[in-house]
Image (cartoon, rainbow, N blue to C red; front, side, top):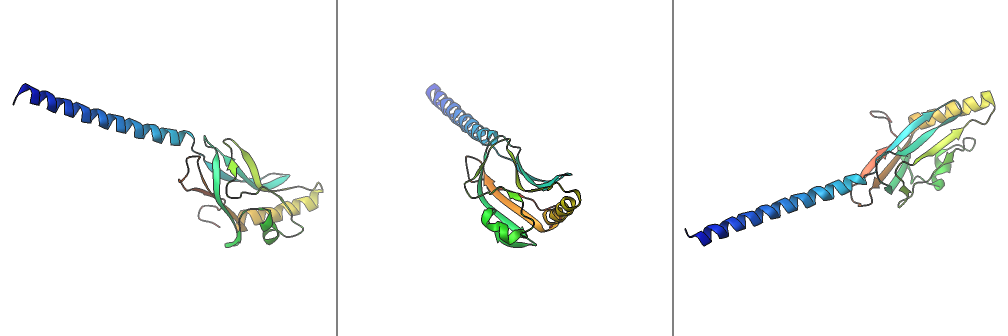
Length: 167
């Protein structure tokens, strides 16, 4: 084998090795960039002396773009989580504050907001009964599901207010 052939083969191997390293680095950089803006939504149940509800928290590093939301009452889909679904879910005397999540809504990194909450009306007995009734609804019967993605899109992340192994 001539010296030119050995040099040509060695140069080809070095070039292919460089291509592989470059491809691997590009792939790792893309994965890192996606992870650096990954949202992480969680729904927490809140039960305090004067407020009961479900709080949405984005504990991730980037904004969450909502692709779909749904509310289920006793396992039956009532619709998208917005103000139009309130009459189907809540009794007229039990009218809580709500925060709508329509497709395209953005939940910023670090944002915390109540999806639904009921505050005490100030009267001790009546307020306590209303909060207890509302807690029963939120804890056992009401489920809110949210599908979301990062700014890159296409991941299909989801979160639900349902208890594991429960409603």
